[in-house]
Image (cartoon, rainbow, N blue to C red; front, side, top):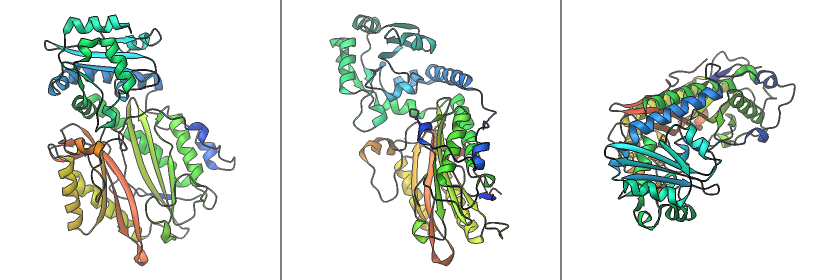
Length: 456
């Protein structure tokens, strides 16, 4: 068994998304593996049980609706927000309200003389879930008469629904669902439908103190599981494989009663193999055995109480005669720290994503560094929408609206990047790192302090 030095700083990306059925995808490790004996203990034992996590999420959602939704409606120049989904046509925005259970439903928020009114309509199977959320003053059967009568009581002039040509997460209403909503609302009010894109973006970006605290706890747990995954005590050089460590990470996620957002990814970086030093290295979850002198990279994504966190850690497997990692590798990691510390102050309140990307590119050029910037606001999946795009790649259409939007104080923002650093013998290694913090006037305040030095 080998001692492993954890190199990479914490990488957090808070996103939204559904759970994944990952457990069946992993083969049980062989009985000889130390992973088999240790993966059963529950990590993050300080986290509450799953039932309490659900309660914490429900409280956080209710508080957010009461504090932030009415101002967001007014800012978007809307009088009401209508969210609708059917079993076969899901609206991702409903998941942000803790209403991700399948089933036909319609949710209606109305601004009425300075007050927020909330109503829900559903099938008999869905109505108990809507009532239990505590969000609504009235829950009714999903019928055209019930929805139209509620709209007629308040007569909203502009009704936002979730369709957008640019931002996928704000485009939750498929054609069939939109026709369904129009039928339920009636011709008069269907004619008042507007895109709720500005409201959806604001709702995703805004965070309450409770949500930030939940994100902080998820970040702490993500770091703990990632560090357990690359712990040297669980690596038998020449025998343990990347796939076995991925199994161990999945076991930890399950034991911690956390929701998995994607399969754990473990890559083995063979420093002696120059062809495998560029990202994404040799690929994830392979049968590649881990040897002395290798780097082991793990990337996890999980969700805790509705807040999702991803973490990256990289460990170095020391050779038998080494008491510390090689100086060249330490220097490479120090370059990663330099990039992170240099970019974090750029994420300031009021700065647009496009300007931030320009400033980051100038910062890297002045220092002679090759940096690929990957960043996006919390509450969005990195694939669906982002404030920033990699250097040298033009903004893709669905991110353009967010790239122009100024960062706001109190938002959660991911800082992710890849930096190419020199190694001995003229070789170069592309290193990936990421962290998440709260946007402020002075830059990012990280949720969990990133590693400032090598963790022995």
